[in-house]
Image (cartoon, rainbow, N blue to C red; front, side, top):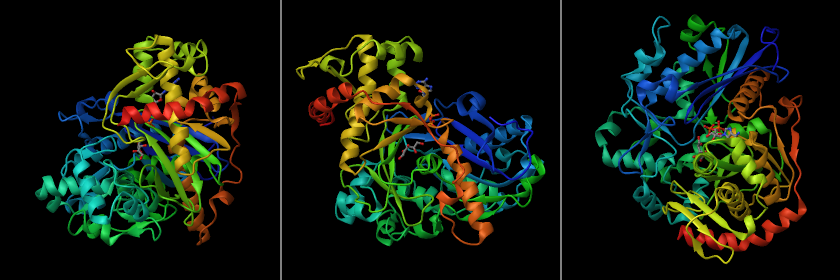
Length: 535
Ligand code: ADP
Ligand code: XUL
């Protein structure tokens, strides 16, 4: 990290409001990370009684988070950055990242509350009454299957929904969550003036006015026409009435939202000239942070959930799985993404049950077992899985003949969870055009060398990593720089041009051809077992 007293030149701030907390990454014009800090919802805001940042409801499907907690976290983050000597006055632009799909429901009183924020008071005390829905549905929520069925029936089936919006109907996608709230709580729906995404809500907070949803995060709603990058009238019509007005405008990710509100200039010392650039989703920001620029450039993010994504120009939406999003930094391009719900949370559970809660022991277990686990397979669907789509939860073990067995040895179980995750990504990714020639690994678990080795061997390509793993907030800082440059130049400037001086990635591991061969020959059998489990 650079010396954070170096305040010469312009600084760019990226925020990331994720499931578990909020991070801030400050970079200078030479792409150096000047300062980083983070807030954890469970430990820094215990009064909201979240676990992993969320509230799990009794039905086992509904998962929510209180939006006022996200608001409170912004003040805490800025206080922490201030205490660390953050040179706020040199920040010329801020952008951000939000967990995708989560929605924030605002009453019309939000307009004045946002515009009139008083720097003498805390954000949370001024915004407590602006929400028409006190607990926001988030991406882990799986309670909208009937609304998904209705959408697919209304629009001509899963493939038709995917062709129109980039994805078939998914339970976590915001449009289906909106339909559920309209059906179950029409009063709350009626009181709602604006439905924001987590991303556009945090942008609104900083700008003191409603912010547009960016086309990239907007692609995760089943509501936007993926080709025109506008709300689809058909998709809105089968969701809820008068929705276009409640969603407001949609804009490309490099758009300026406005100047930062005086709350932040007075309280933290931001310059009144600091601009807020449209916020986007965490996965689109990771794509920006990893600077994927051409076909074959694939990233795997090992966060709370695992995602695999890549750059593409010619989208082929699938009615079975995967997502096409508008590209967050290139208005002509797309990104393709596959999401696995059972990512870090599944690895953590196995770490706790099989490796005494230690990542080191988990890594040793992988090192002590052979590639392919002697033919044994474990499938870990602790939560309903997204790829492949299934509601069948549990852990499923098979011997080398494909017969069900009760358990694996602890060491073999540690290897099994990682192997099955990457084999699943390889087979499902292939179905939507994700065939890597190299992989950039990111997210919390990309710090684990044993996990990266299995990744490289399963795909048979080298795996690279960046200087730091928090690439959603870094990507947001890069997008702040990109949006600011477009604004200053008065025209769109290619992202690659703005990023030309960014640091290169370093190779973490090369594949072992013999191990890769083991995985390639196991893949058909693995897919068959996975299909059997998913039903
Ligand atoms: P988010 O999706 O919330 O942004 P992160 O990318 O920050 O998540 O990743 C957080 C996850 O990283 C944690 O849930 C944890 O399981 C995992 N993690 C952190 N360190 C390691 C490690 N050394 N090995 C494997 N997983 C790790
Ligand atoms: C993506 C998804 C998750 C969240 C995590 O579709 O649901 O990756 O974005 O924050």
